[in-house]
Length: 292
Image (cartoon, rainbow, N blue to C red; front, side):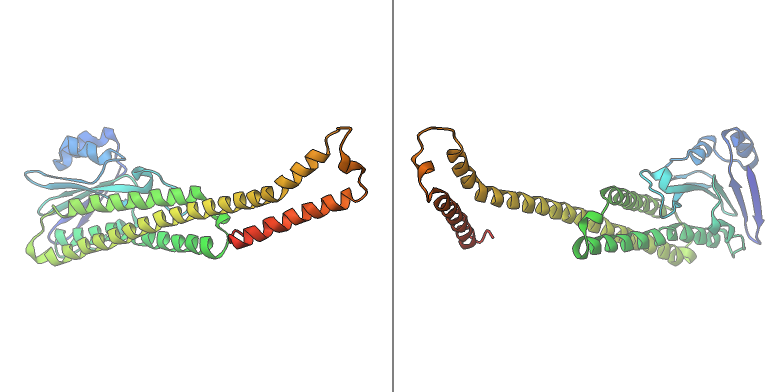
């Protein structure tokens, strides 16, 4: 467990990184925090939540932490959480992995609320680049489908992308639910409103990305089905040409002794002309029906 204390003029920030369950009694005794809330803080997959206690407010937020090329299918893989214990003159943060934006927040602020708002804004802004990644990737996939070769598209990658977008939106909605319950002094309401507006903006971006991903999936499947239909149509046309020819060949391939046509000198050229006429007739009929 690594504990770092930043002393400002009007408040104290205590950052606890990497605690173990065995550290809970020490943290409880030293900082006066609830045992069960600390257990929630150490649970890797815990979703955002908020609870009010007599002396402090406890809440959990999750930040987007997965790299672009890593395929995540659940919330713990996609994000990491930070637990906050907000007192009037003290802020305690608990997390398992290091966060760059926490290190960059080591400067002091005028109050604990100003410091906390900076952290909240940094957490929400972790969804900015992922929203841009997914938008660019979906545009690239759409361009490939319509302008290049739809066979180059991987349904597996599209599935993982849809899963990440869907989970990201859920996380934003959960974070938004927590932020809407936090009470700040009136002086900081406008700054908190900016953070909430960022949540709404990113939620709309991921919502649009979900629609785009669904539309691209449906388009891909439609094009694939159309290609299959074209192949079946081509095979059907070939069958229509060769079925009557195969019938004629089958009739004259029977080994019957008395078949007058076989003794006729012009039987072969006449048969070939009949077969050619059948092909021409089928071709003309397909043209009139606009099948070819």
